Image 1: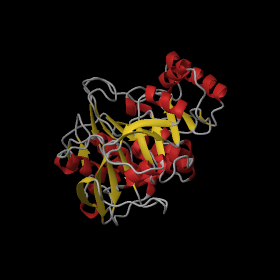
Image 2 (image 1 turned 90 degrees about the horizontal axis):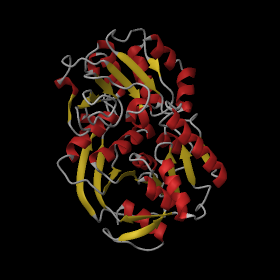
Image 3 (image 1 turned 180 degrees about the vertical axis):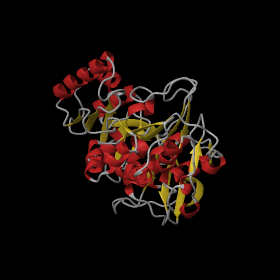
Length: 400
């Protein structure tokens, strides 16, 4: 059986087959300040007690701090509900992006199943947890029953080899892989990463996070699996190899994360009005450090605004202690709250008509970060930082 089948079988306490439909017990369920309100209202309509107040997580991270009365009212409602239900794991806007917090606080563990009302729940696959994104009403059912209805998915195996060579990063590797997956059916399949390729935990989070952009149901790194979970390659529908040594700086052009090209194909040809570093994809300490190293002692181009949003308050504190924030601010960066920010198009740092942004986030759909006539190019923090310096999309190999 594949790794994902092994996890599901363990949770059910019996063997399963790919394609089988089952109500699967989960270990954790979470929602945030955008997805949880509908889930909570639906849960209240069910009239049932909560499944387990210690295994339901609510995290405020999208509208932090609230940018409109409606957002503030929704958060107020959730605070009251959390108190009524005795929810133990509640993060009230002072911690960071939900996917970062789940891993930082060690709420997700290898071999377990997480359901979350967010499409990037697959980020927890970085630590071997099967993270499954669900809708708000399905979150309500999970909070009431501790189970999720699902079809046992097929698997795409991606073998990683080699080591990334700076300034190439995990973001570049993920974009390369999304370009490869564009030629294959990925929907409702789980991507399992294996091989002897060397990646840090932050790099794994980036890789797992972006797999939802290819249509994958989830993504898994299996190196840290508990010994009782045994699996093999049966049930795999596709095997791919990704050589990390050969990865170079990449871009995802508008309007799809898998619309990828090498960055040097656009170098010096596209002016950018905004550069953005942050999100659950690339707002970690390593990302901020890379950007600060490039910007140290320099100034952002006068025609470009650079916005930096750390993935969590813990990341922000460490970045302050290490002088990273000072370097970024001295270069002209604008520091946003440790939250989702402009990534989802609902908060600080939105784009105006016709503006172009180069961003370390995960989506560049039409209107994703503001105006429907704006354009977003996805890239690594290194590429974003260099482009902010020069005011045009630039190859970080020329600066690093």
